[in-house]
Length: 174
Image (cartoon, rainbow, N blue to C red; front, top):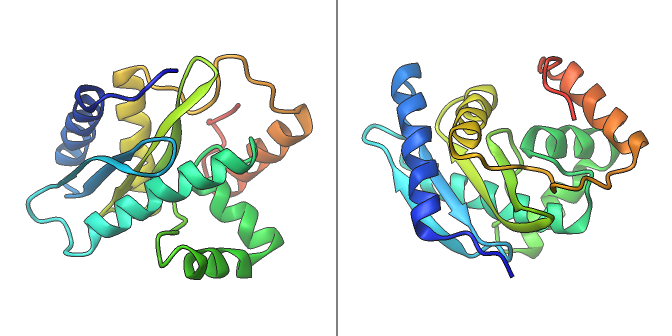
């Protein structure tokens, strides 16, 4: 069984912080295991007072939703999917989990091989800014947000790519 280790989470957090400093946007970053339990959390100086809780909730949400369906590649896709189909589900899920669910950009699952080993959440910028920081750190750390052998049906990939188009991330493709 693959695991996401604290040292790996710390490398990811450092990469996010470097990008956040470059963008001049202080954030909080949370990394959780596949069950949504916290591995690491850091709040940059100047980040909003509620950003640690929001980052943790984003990471928890990605772990929970990704374990439900390959459709949930990241926070932006999850947010748009719910907006289009069942906006009330997000509210209900937040209630069911005692407020742990928060759906926004800047969050994604993390895979080693074909196994989901965790997820991350970033909070403090706009959804788009948080997403840019997450992409940068994922690339810097070699983290994948999809399994190595992606069995996601093509129709689902097409749908996800159309969501990326609609939210202004048309260059991002599965």
